[in-house]
Image (cartoon, rainbow, N blue to C red; front, side, top):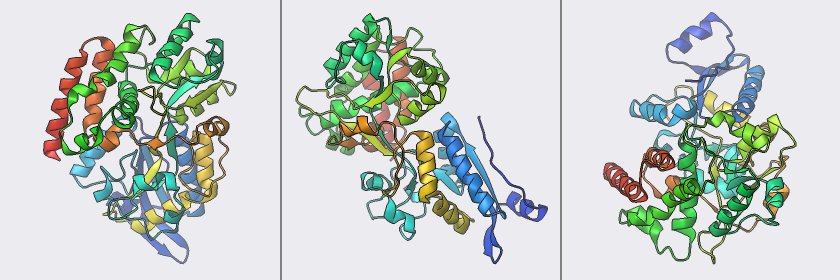
Length: 417
């Protein structure tokens, strides 16, 4: 497990109580105590938050903060810690503040920061009873990363509006000798993410879909309707739109492929663009909305909370955890994280320097939808989507088999929940 620790050792009298479970207190000479903070963030977001936490410790020299990223193991480790009711004092909710973590989180409504959360993201961190359970430093407004130069070279004066146009654009880019869609199958989260994004357009927003949303909520969904979602993966594979090593490519090379013009499209968020710009500031990259599945439908954005933190309701260090969140929510600190991560702010009073602002402005009227699995699937289906995504890419599973696998997993998890 890749683990980063940010810490400041004050004296032995502080270290020993921390080893026994941690404690915090406020006195005339400032805050004292220790905190554990966990996230799934990677570079550059992790380093940006790490810097803010270092500033917090500089301002409060009696405080020690252990800041850790669990990376791709985050979900499994957090599920184990939830089962044991032994969570970090502060932890990232990675899109699941309400549907997965709410019962473990302390409401933040009484904190001043809660009044500043952006309207476009407030619902994703608010429970049905009105409790705000997490603080979104950044939010997500994503679709598909693309190379603007390649789009023009392929003869396009606009981004693909429909799925049919997307496939045609892939054909035109392929004719230039460029990989249309870069897929990193060594970590099947990329295929799951592709289906997660496309499923919203294919099953939720399209005018011909019927009431799929309600059927997914109540357990009556016809899983044969999942076929176009799995079919998106097989279509890209069968038409040669993926990189030839799609089943084995390592995600660590994604930013390099984007930075130096070796791929046209990639299904990631703004943070990946920021990572590519670290390697090549001149990379001509942008973000386009998700293409419409039906001709008369609209394009959409996918979004919600991104780097978002809540406080464990049973933390023995609640006062210190509140102090950390309030410090992180200061406008200058939010702006720093957003600028470094290349993500929009989760607060209304932040003037962040977003290089993509002009491109986003073209699609300002489009609706933002949550990721499909976060809203319309029971917790645990992400793992199933990773399984079928990898198998579809490798040609080891048919579309019908993928639909049956999704159905079986859905029914089993619905029964548990």
